[in-house]
Every structure is written in structure tokens, then in C-alpha cells.
Image (cartoon, rainbow, N blue to C red; front, side):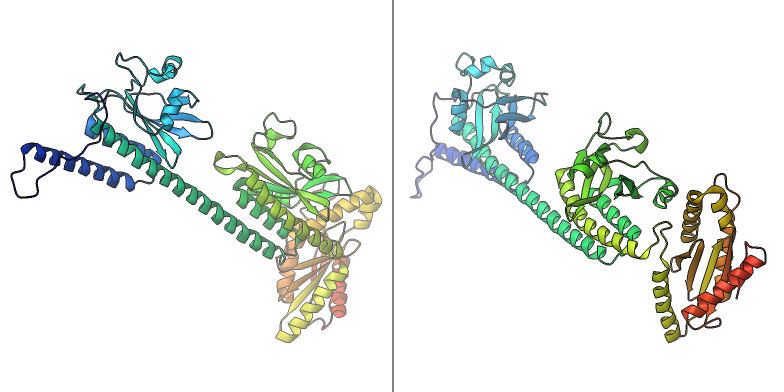
Length: 537
């Protein structure tokens, strides 16, 4: 209760200004008023420099305790979405989950008046029924409640119990606490506005960053014509944007009616990953509707699984070490051509709708770029071996001959032929012959330099172009290919070998026909001399 039986406004008594003696009583009143103003000024200075709510609550409690020394002090934060008061500070309670709900009763109506009010009567019995109904409220041991309200918005609540000296609260005490409550409410509102502005700024920065990223991705895609490198770039961006550990791109193959892994990134075993990307190791394929990837492909809708364990949609969760996955369809001209998978969000967090939106933006651009790259590849590559077709090779070689002549450069051409290939076809069948061609093509392509170009010339013959390479150097490269080729092991087949002939510009010819003819002649010499060897023209 307030000492004196009621609340009144503090007023300074009239102080004579005519030079007459000032009474001791007036001096004491003046000193007391100065002390009060200094205390209030300190409150404003301390609180106005804080931008974190929890620091404001601590400062509130410290200011009140420093002035009044209160046994029981608690601060509650009002949570608008739950309409509850949640405990954020207490000097004597250890109730981290302490909360009580706002209601339409007398206690709630009293809070809305935004004035300090007593909650106990003269007999220490609670004045409000809520204390009888909620045992938690009785634990507060509070005498007065002081609302924290600004601009008609409830920010929280401060409760104070008895003072250490046992003296009752007077109107000066409550006025001091009320000032702290009012100024703290304003500071809390400022904190909220500042936090909201920071959040909006972060969101805007992220949007701008994402737009810039998507622009750069789209721009880069237009310059990458090679399908494998394009897929690798797209997947790398998808993994980075979503902060995932790893991912894969699966393309639909109409010939087999299934989704197959075309590229994978992020595996710890890089050698194993490279073998998958080089088609040396086959990953599981999915039919439309099978597993997460198959469902996404069939429905053309993204799926997020933040817990794959025990989910029927996810296939082979244990062997793939995927704990969470986001899968997005790639659609071009209303046709799904494949899916992008990213798995295991880094730092243990979940994939979100924001991740999905970013992946959608990437997949929209990726689908068009991949579709164009596929058409380009189909036009210039051999269906069986995946090597360039003869016509495309001739165009590239003609361009390089013109360049070599203009800049006085050298180049070399090699013709290669699989030894005794006809006998393999005759004895084991054409299907086995096709597997031999695939294995041979893969080996030759993977063991050439990045600048070298290889094409299927016809049947079991291959033609290789070595830019800016003289005949001797080209022969050394060809010998490495021959030696490695002789070590290829295929089940139930005899040891393979290859014969290679090498010719160079300008020594062995100034045009395509001459170079190809002379390299071919050298290759036949290698055959006649016993096969499995390199011969220079």
C-alpha cells in the first residue's frame, strides 16, 4: 500500500525569492526533488543507450533495485501471437517456463489502465480472482503490478514485492518505478522497430544477392556448351545457394523410361564420385513415380523431406547417407527433363520454402540450358560411344588448319583402330562388340589432354586431333594411349589392343584429306607389323 493512505502529486512548496531566510523544510524538499530528478535523468541515460530487449530488462531491474531494494521483482514480456505474459527476468524465481494468459477479467482491465496498482489487500489476500485460480501468480509474492505500455501497445509487465526494509511504497516510489516502466516501454518499442528494420534489411539484401546470383548463373549458362560442364556448374550453384552438403542432377532417358544420375557433387570420396560422373559406376535409376526423384518428375512439383528416415518416399536412405533432401523438377516447354537433388543442409538446419524458391529459379534457367546443350550434343556426338561424329571433327580440324597456317603452328592427327574387332563381333555378338566400343571410347576420351579432340571415324576406328603438337610429341601421347588401352579388362573377353598411326601438319600434308590419309596409312603399317603399336608416317 501507499504510505499516507492515498496517492498525491508531489509539489514544491513556495520558496521565498526576496532574499529572506529559506526554511530548513523547504531546503529538504528542494534537495529531495533534485535527487529525484537526478535519479530520473540517470534512468533515461541508462535505458536510452540500449538496443537489446534482454539488456533493457536487466537495466530496469538494476535501476529499481538500486533505488528501492525489493525482495521480489519480476519482469514479463507480452507475446502478441500467444496473448501470454512470459517471464524474462526474476531476482528470486527459477521458472524459465513461467507464463500466464491475458483474459477479459478485472486484472486484465486493470493492466490496460497503464497505472501501477496493488494486487493485495490490507489482509494480504489477493484482490483478483486470477491469483486464486493460478498458483503460479501466487509465487510472485508481488504487492504492485506496473504495466509496460506505449502507444496503447502492451509491451510487458513489471511486478514488485515487499521492500527489504519492510516500509510500504509511497507515491514517490511508485512514481519512480512508473517512470522507469514508461521509458523502458518506449525503449522496447524502439528495439522492436530496430529489429524489424534489421530483418527487413537482411531480407532485402538477400533478395538482391539472390537476384544477382541468378543473373550470373543465367549469364554463365549461356557460355557453357558442354553438357557435362554445364551440369556440374548448375549443381554446384544449387548446392551453394541452399547451403547443402551434396547433390545430384538426374536426367530422364526416354530410351529406358527412367531417371539416371548424370552428375553428382559433394561426396567425401572424390575418386568414387569421379567414377560415377564418368559412368564407370552406375547409380540406381528411378522410374517415374518411384522414390522422391520419381515423384517429383511425375508430378512436376518440388518435395522437401527434412527427415528421410522412415519415410516411404525415400529409397535407400541408409546407403546414401541423406538425412534431408530437397528435390526440384526441371521443366522446359511443359516437359520435365530431369530433377535437381540437394541433400543434408549444412549446420544441421532444415531446407525451407526459401530454398525451394531459389532452386526453382535455378532449375527454370537450367532446364532451358540443358535442353539446348542436349540438342547440340545429339547433333555432334555419336549415340553409341558419346564421341564426336566424323563430320563435326572435320569442321573442327579445318578451323585448326586455317589457324595453324595463319600463325605458323604445327598440329598432328592420329588414326586408331581396335585390333581384331571383327572376330569379337563374330564370336561374342554385336551387343558385346558395342560394349567394347563403349569401353574403348570412354578410355580414349578420359586419357586425352583437355585440348585434344577425338571422334568416332567409323566402325571401330577413331580419329584424334592434337593441337600445337609435333609428330614426335603426338607419338609419345599415342604410345601412352596404346599402353593404357592394352590394360583394359573386360569380362569373358580376350585382352584388347589398339593400333595407331600418326601424321603431322605441315610435314605430312597441308589439308584434311592428306593428313587423314597419311595417318590412316601409318595405322595400317602398324597392323601389318603385328598390331598393338604406334607408327609415325
